Figure 1 (cartoon, rainbow, N blue to C red):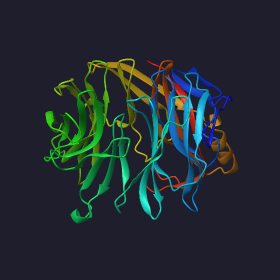
Figure 2 (figure 1 turned 90 degrees about the vertical axis):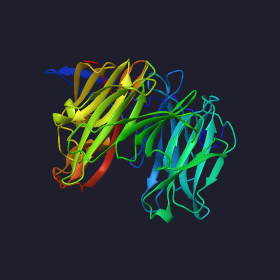
Figure 3 (figure 1 turned 120 degrees about the vertical axis):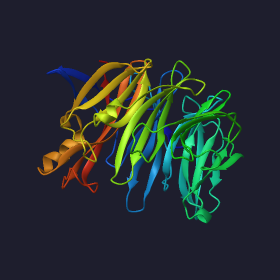
Figure 4 (figure 1 turned 135 degrees about the vertical axis):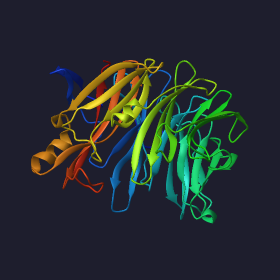
Length: 411
């Protein structure tokens, strides 16, 4: 077994429980996913057998900005199947894991190594054993970040100095580190922020040269364009829009989260759109944006589109206010909503911080929705905020943050 690898038999999530209370659901008990006050975990992907891969940093030290790279594989009952903790500490950033075409798992992250930025990839079997040599990719002397990790390729991005950092270049590599493509994010066809890999190419989501949201399919990376669909603005005062996130649906089409912006005075509105497998726009919905809803997450589960939203205007939503999940069919028709209110008592580290001081406000930092064969789950991170000001983007975080898993019932 590789250095740093160990199998855990203990339960990572001790209990996930939902109790109906006054017409809303309250997540009244969950155990911590984090094992230390300087640990972070994020959902990456789901294995073919339903197990969940999560990656992050363990034991982060803010003094030297180092941590151990951390990969956890959860069974379908939320016990730990296996985990990997790197034996050395690195300045590790942009940590991702993905299941490759050959069935191996790649754990990839950027780090400062030998006086330059690099990207490093480790490989595992689906049982957590070492499965290949480490790959180290230099950054050609420029600061870089991981744009996306896909089953067949890795996309790295860096800003172009000769363009005064206004444009970025995408480097496309196979998982042996060989370059298979390189292109400017604005050439050709506009900027793209999200890519879905298909059997016959890739689908890119982003923005065209007229600053409109756009979906485009190519036969490779970068490849030739097979089809493209720009999306007109849905509001008269919109100045630019782009597709922030897109997901593949069981019917072969795509659901997209489109953000529309007004620059001055600043406004941000979210539109939901559905495209067919050929890129044709099937339907688009701006009603929820007109109602003042702000969206924080989207997924597709059991042939339903699920969006977490709030009407709160705070930078981070209050834990005391319910989280609302809107459910839509693939035809765009509403199927109802689910409300969940988190209990601070379910967050041990957060509870200790709140008990020590009475002037702190518990808030939700982020939530990721995870479709599983046992239902829709939510990975939630919360912390205590000091000097709470709902009109300010500047915050002071006090004490430990907590990450827990909750269940999200259908309406």
